[in-house]
Amino acid sequence: MRILNEIRLDNLRGDLFGGVTAAVIALPMALAFGVASGAGAEAGLYGAVLVGLFAALFGGTPTLISEPTGPMTVVFTAVVASLIAASPEQGMSMAFTVVMLAGLFQLAFGAMKLGRYVTMMPFTVISGFMSGIGFILIILQMPGILGQAAPGGGVMGTLQALPSLIRAINPQEAVLAGLTLAILFLMPTRIKRILPPQLVALVIGTLLAIYWLGDQDIRRIGEIPAGLPTLQLPVFSVEQWQTILIDAVVLAMLGSVDALLTSVIAGSLTRKPVDSDKELLGQGIGNLASGLFGGLPGAGATMGTVVNIQAGGRTALSGLTRAAILAVVVIWAGALTARIPLAVLAGIAVKVGIDIIDWRFLSRAHRVSIKGAFIMYGVILMTVFVDLITAVAIGLFVANVLTIRRLADVQEASVCVLPARRTRDEGQCADLSCDERSVLAQGRGRLKVLHLSGPLVFGAAAAISRQAPKLEGAQAVLVDLSRVPHMGVTTAVAVEAVVRDALAQGTKVYMAGVHGQPRERLEHLGLREVMPNEQWIQDREAALKLAVAQMASR
Image (cartoon, rainbow, N blue to C red):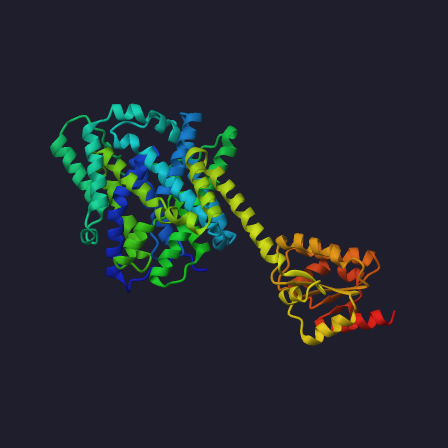
């Protein structure tokens, strides 16, 4: 596997222009996310530079732009709040340790080649989780929109304090926030193609604050320390190791899903294959570096990626260009951001939260599936009001239980016993030829066929158990697996139980068409030791004839 990402010079102009455009969009977003997280605007910039740099160097998607994103910021904000509440002196350092560990987990995911599995989550859970994060981001920015400091206590603390925040509203900051939202929502599309609305809102809001409000008492970013970020050594509290590890796993999983979903979008736009496992390695290195230097965690950013591609970016050189431009801002131009009003950044963050919410699916989920809508709304409510981890865990559990139930219902139709009571049921169950039906009829009901078809996972085990009583009283039983390409462990154990029960009753058992993985699994369960080789027959018709002949000879 190639170590570095795809970096070429044959598209120099497109990559440079794509990188510059992505950097222009990234600057206000990084500042907004840094302030929103509680770690400071500089943490957002450090994360934008470091995650973007290393993900572009070592990732597996050439055009992917990686930086702090709304979902990652919301989770990190909760981590910061909980750790600072538990340890005011070391809480922030411990939060950056969580980011480092998240990067290590992503490296482990990539090394174990789990990229293809990371995004295998039900859409209702992903949609509900992302929408819940969007609502959280909006709620947490309400104090900033109203010109007030965050009251603490997370979502519930903000909602409880909302009446008092409204009464103490700062009109100047509220106007700046409203103007920011108006620009973001109302800017004509033809202008958006030329100028990013976030940058326009940032510039106009800052200029108004400087020349209209002057020295009035409004909250601003303050000067960001110029120069390189300082190294943040890992801080690990033995008492809170479990919390730190769980938070790191959540960040790693969310960042992996976020990055890989965005990489799929990038791959579809550029029609290039995506190396998911390599992308996880790049994301892991980026988050590890960001945590080491006090930066926010990041992932693939859909907006920056799409803009990069539309501006001409085709290789990782565009991502490197973007990181270099932002690094210049961090090292030499930090003082220029000092007078940016926090209300403007709150407005930008609110727009991000609104965009994260899956409005399209929210409006039609109940028409697609009532159960799916129930899962999605439940995940949203738990994400906002309970806990991110609990929301995903319960959402996945319920979704998987419903899926297993549906699979069991589908697979029950592929399990039956022949001859059936009604001829119509036989036709629906198995595609026996005329000759096979004739041979089966010669058994006069004393020969039973347990027919299974299709890939069988553990949902089919219950159906097999329900069919087992129909085999009682038979002189011979033929287990037909000729149409089974794969058999799960639970299903194999259920088949084994049927065979052993029949043998214990003195019934002759034949295995027909057992091949590949199902044969290997049944052999490992020991069925070859209790059944002679001549009773394992590949051809189903031959197995039926042998069973009838041996019954007649008794």
